[in-house]
Amino acid sequence: MLVAILVLMAGTGAFFALGAAVTGGQPQAMDEDDRAVATSAAPTADALSPSASPSPDPIVPLYFSGTGTWTYAEPADTAVFGDAGTLLKYNVAVENGIGLDADEFSAFVRATLADARSWTAGGAWRFQQVGGGDADFTVYLASPEQRSYLCGSQNTTVSCRNGDNVVINSARWITGVEHWDGTLDTYRQYAVNHEVGHRLGHGHEVCPGDGEVSPVMAQQTYQLAGCTGNAWPFPDGETYVSGPAGDYNGPDLPPDDFVDQ
Image (cartoon, rainbow, N blue to C red; front, side, top):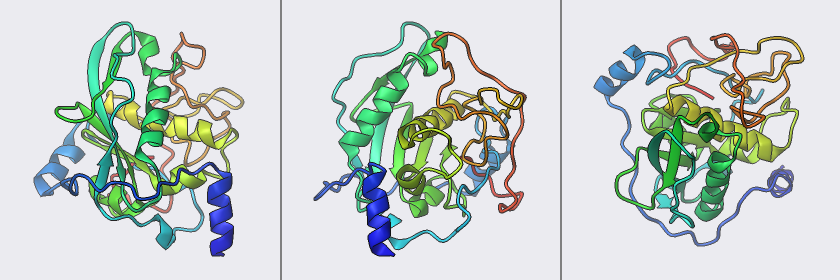
């Protein structure tokens, strides 16, 4: 089984880092007051909506466990990207011990957000990666356990966004989901764009019709619901693909578990 897992990880392009530096401490979890704020806020801002586990097997293998400490990536390029709109500064952190490289993850996040099909296309947002100091949000690549901690939820199977924490679950990063009809890289692009979209104030949308392109804010980790998988808010670089507001609401999650995907 372990050999099969390692082959799968290598075949899906998982990033392995030997001797990654241990920097930073464990981020603060939400306290009860923070949870009250998060669950009472508008769903397009701070509230986290229910979503589903992408895996029929909820057991998370031990190799997805990390140390609870973080390596913050130093940006290879600090230039602002995007032509107009509000500037948001972000940083990138990868949990130590999960075998994934902070610089490679950072480069992937930057390439995704800087793509002409991503959130800068609408002219409302610009982004700049910072290596430290003040940031408007942090993109974390976290073990399932730390994903649960960062988002104040017992869920360990999906990614999430909680306030300024944009959290990509390492289990999903490594394996994707079986029903995704693109490559692992396009699934990863979807995960980054979807969770950053929540940080920008977007709520969940659903598939507008069979055979149509899925909105990036649909819970595509759950299902495609008849749409084709889509990683981008502006797939043609100009037009935002939207659908009706709504959730796919996974049957395996309790109704009070505020998670995302």
